[in-house]
Image (tube, rainbow, N blue to C red):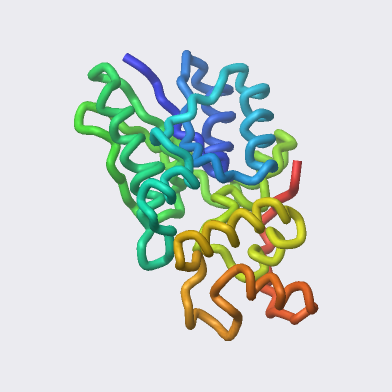
Length: 233
């Protein structure tokens, strides 16, 4: 029987893993879904958590990374075809869970102030939502992370995620030119775009979008929630 903690690296799963180790110490197994397209800050965050938890985080992965899967499928992920989450995260996790010994427990970082949902975790797996048991809401999560001195990366998803906002694409263009250039290459190779055409008045393709950023075109800035405390490691 195993005790599994799903650790995406976001604020909720990070707080769950650290707090569980404090108040319910046992031989946990920590897992995450790695796509191979994470920003460096995310890899550093996982490494810091491994130090704090004193155990490695097991990467539950598909046989290929994001780029390799794009090549395999000859298709880019988009808001209309979100195959990346299914292929790179959901299906490998289901396979991992189904291979666990009966009676194993999965600990999931859903809070008390979130809508009730369970998800797909495997028929023989017991699922616990400790933060709901503790009555933890978003403010409690941030307060605990502040107490532990833990910062959450600004971005925890893929560098080339089609769901990111224009400001996040601009940050990628400014801060990670190599990753941006690879995105342009993939769009040209596949003949499609990560961003959806007609989504806004900006170009959909990254090559044209980069030219707009380079000439200094202004974009609308989004205000962050007062509780959204993030930083780079």
